[in-house]
Length: 196
Length: 170
Image (cartoon, rainbow over all chains, first blue to last red):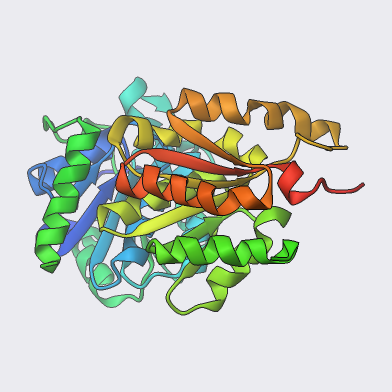
C-alpha cells in the first residue's frame, strides 16, 4: 500500500466536476466540510454533524425514493466503518443511481487524529467488493483521480470509490448545523426541482 | 377478521397513507407484512443488517418527499437511539413498527431486559409509543401513528405487544 499523497480539499471537485447534477448526503465531520466547500453549503446537499454511520443508509433511502436523480454519499473511513453493514444493504438493493465516495484519511481527524482501522489492516475496496459492489475502485494517485469522474459516469451503479488522502485538514467551511432547517431547505429544493 | 389478516390490514393502511419503502430486520412478527411489501410493484422491502440503517433510510426518503417505515423486533430498538436524533433534532418523520419480545408471556429470559427498555428508550428520544394489545386496537393505532408522523411531523412507534402477537413457544 502506497503512502497517500492526495489532499482531501482538492479531490471532490475533481470527482464531481458538476456537483449541481447530484443530490449529496455527507457523513459527519471532515466529509461534511468538504461537501460544504464543494457545493457552497448548497440546498442539494444534506450534511450531517452527528448520527455517525448514517450517511450511506440515508443515501440509499434517497436513491430508492428518487430513482431519476443521481445521489452521491460522501463519507469518511470512520463513519463508514461504524455501519459497514450498510454497504451490504446497498449492494443487495443495487440502486443504479447511487455512488458512494469514502474519503479515507486513515484516522479520526475530528477527534484528534487517532489511528483508524484502514491504517492497520482494513481494506474498504475489498470490503465493498465483498459486500457485492461490482463497481468499486481505489483512488490514491493523480492519474486515478483524473479518471474518477469518468468512473462515476460510466460504471454501473451502485458505485464505490475509496479515496486515500493524507491526514491533513478538511476544507474550512462554516455550514448550517440546524438539522431541521437543513431538512426543510433540502426538501424545498427537491420539490421545486421536480416541479411538484 | 381472523388473526392472520392483521398484517394485510396494517400493510394496506400504510400503503394508503403513501408508504412505499418497508425497511426491516426479519422477525416473526413482521414476516407477513414484509411479504406483502415484496409482492407489490409499487412498494419495496429493504432488508437491513441493523435497524439503525432503516431510520436513516426513512430520513433519506423524506428528503425527497417519500414515506418509509422501519419494521423490527423490540430488541432492535436498542440499536437505534443515536439515529433517532433525526427525529428529535431534525423533525424527520420516523415511523417504527415494533413487534415485542420480552413482555406478556415471554419464556426466554434473554428477551426481558430489552423488552422492558423499549418504551423508556423511545420516550427518551421523543418517539410516541402507540401500543396494540388487541386486534381492535390495530386500526385506530395505525391511524393515530400515521397522523402523528406524516401529518404532525412527529415520530411514533406502533408497538405490537405479545398479548396481541402471541408469545413465541419454546
